[in-house]
Image (tube, rainbow, N blue to C red; front, side, top):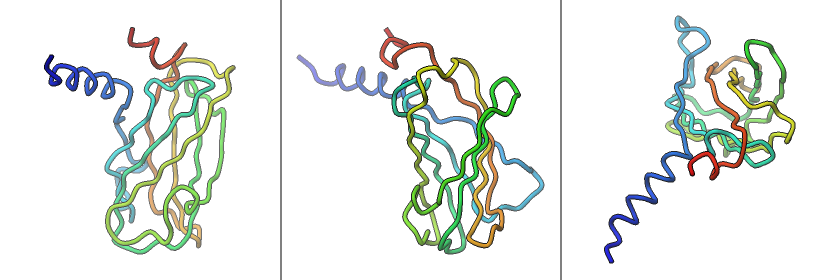
Amino acid sequence: MSRIPLAISCFLFVSTIVRATDVEYCDDNKEYEVKVQGVNILPYPIVRGEPATFSISANTDNVISSGKLVIEVSYFGWHIHSETHDLCDETKCPVAVGDFLVAHSQVLPGYTPHGSYSLKMKMVDGHKKELTCIKFSFEIGLGSSLAAYI
């Protein structure tokens, strides 16, 4: 039995449950110090009551010793949730010059409505200077991540 078809099947299955989402800057005319290359969401769509991880790949030309992530979530255009996280809890600090990854995981409550959401994330340094601001959309599904693909 060949392992190649099995490997391809596994790759195709995994690639459907991890999604790189389209990212926009909050202000297209602003030159942000932190450049975001992409956001991956696992699983996709997000499953209520199960851990979801948002991984943001970025790049900086300056060392970042401390900061915050300020997150705002909207559902059908209505602001529904805000939270703030210490940057150093989501990535290794100090953030060195070059590429880095910010990863945040959380479990959404079982009563979270399914549908399309939008997220706005600002990264500010220890002096409250805005380093970047991005927006992206994501989906929360009805059932388990496996059931969505059977």
